[in-house]
Amino acid sequence: MLKRILLMMTAVVGAATLAFAQDPSGAETLAANPMAPVDYVWVLVCGFLVFFMQAGFAMVEAGFCRAKNATNLMAKNVIDFTVASLIFMAFGFALMMGTDYHGLVGISGWFLHGESYDVGKYLMFFWQLVFAGTAATIVSGAIAERLKFKAYFIYSLAVTALIYPIYGHWVWGGGWLSQLPFGIGHVDFAGSGVVHTIGGFVGLAGAIVLGPRFGKFAKDGKPRAIPGHSITLAALGTFILWFGWFGFNPGSTFSAHQLRIAVIAVNTNLAAAAGAAVAILLVFAKTKKWDVGMMLNGCLAGLVAITAPCAWVEAWAAVVIGAIAGALVVGSVYFWEARGVDDPVGAVSVHGINGIWGLIAVGLFADGTYGLGTTSEPLVKGLFYGGGSGQLLAQVIGAVVCAAWAFGLGFVVFKIMDKKFGVRVSPEEELKGLDIIEHGTPAYPNFYNYNN
Image (cartoon, rainbow, N blue to C red; front, side, top):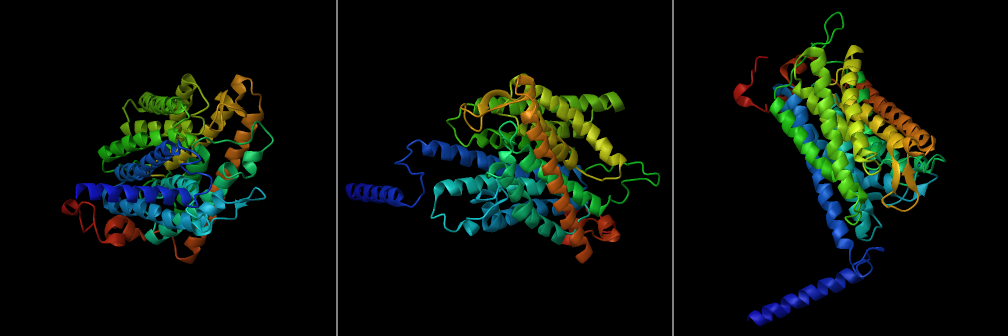
């Protein structure tokens, strides 16, 4: 009996192997590349880490916001990845990675149709999907505590169907920014621009259209603190994001055989630490208080800034990039508040401003030892390493285009929604909290004041 079972198992395994060999899987097969499974597992595991960053964003946003809106923030972080999964499969991935049309958009692969189970395309789809979900969820922090849920649903669709994938095509899909005649064209290793600047500046557009929360600014325009309900959750979320970034950046090699992953992981960590240290020290110098919230955002700012240059810079440069990011996030938070922009979690400062800084840092600190996933030509070389101003110019152009594209389209989307049905909840609903009004479920029912 045991012998018969073993024979049957052998036959099944043999049939499966034969089926895989005959499967129309494009150029990537085990026969053609016996080492492919290592790279596939690497990219998928890193993708799983990036997906887990959704939990990190959810915890950070909930912690920095009030308890009466915690359910709403959980719902938004779930729905944006739900929307991203379906819409990016239908439209976004084709626009981003499909056959290039004059450097502007991709025009093939709608609904993943015609890919014939091309495992390489499926792998790329999953990787870009988790990035698209990250870009969408960044926005939720900037517009927290006053946006209608249906408006959030529509904006998530716009980001993952159009705003993220079209700009992504310009950089990663063979589009016009990657073909700029400066340096080797605009480059962004893991998404300081494609993911974070996009999310940050769409968030800025939303925050401007919505206006500040009630009570955020005094009559003279002076900002007031609206404390979040749990610094514990915010810290937990930051640790989850820090952990997830070890998939976000090293996974962008798209290969476990690129040993540069060790450099990328170290650079990622150093920038986060430098950002956190500088942010908390700067605020202490101003207030004589050790501001944990600003330290957490300093950490995230360092992570955002190192995302574009992580594969191309030395360790000391990663520390400098992270330190500048920590200073930028502090200055940026004060800057936007002074101009009446209410960003409850600092998303614009963390992701938008430091996404731009990360892109520019490539043009300054890239040391010319690594290229686009390889140590062969063309190599990325910045101004400080004898690369001249060409790469820096390409990076500045890409950064300006990214910010303008994200803010411009984001503003249009929020303005159209506002004209059609009003994107903001009523004053009474905002004061009561979105958990009960929008969802009928408070996050903390035993402590919820139904009369407030």
